[in-house]
Image (cartoon, rainbow, N blue to C red; front, side, top):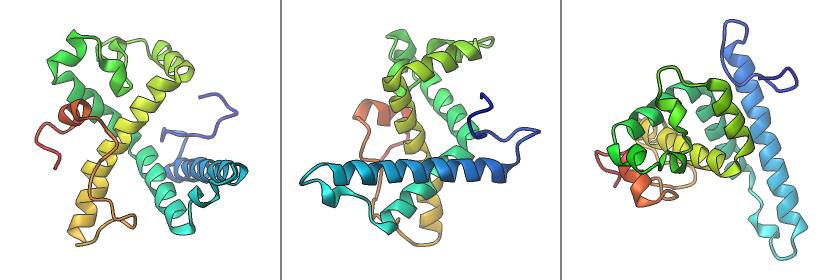
Length: 172
């Protein structure tokens, strides 16, 4: 984490509120960029997020960032349990690299690859988001007898193979 970037991980020097604020700003910036790109394309003006959608997305981004370490550990654990993923070198489809499964994996090598590989980042983000929805948001909403503001009832953006690896006990 270079000093020009806001803190995205709670450490001895970084309080949870600082991470939440940085994640909130990241979410706001992403939503603003989406709004600008939506209005820039003729005929695409209606794809900009409304206020409720923006708040839902921002809350989910903050939720994922605040549970990043927990979600990453769960992602690695689920992939590690599925022998075919490593056997056939498919860890990148989960946003992971082989070194993450090694005891003495090179953290800087991984971070550099993640920084320079947008597909790897996207796959990791999708998997972490799916894990957040299925293991944190959906159970919390069910306890309160509510459904999410977007009316979603599941994770419908991952292919069946990734769903089976991440949620081996079922995903319906």
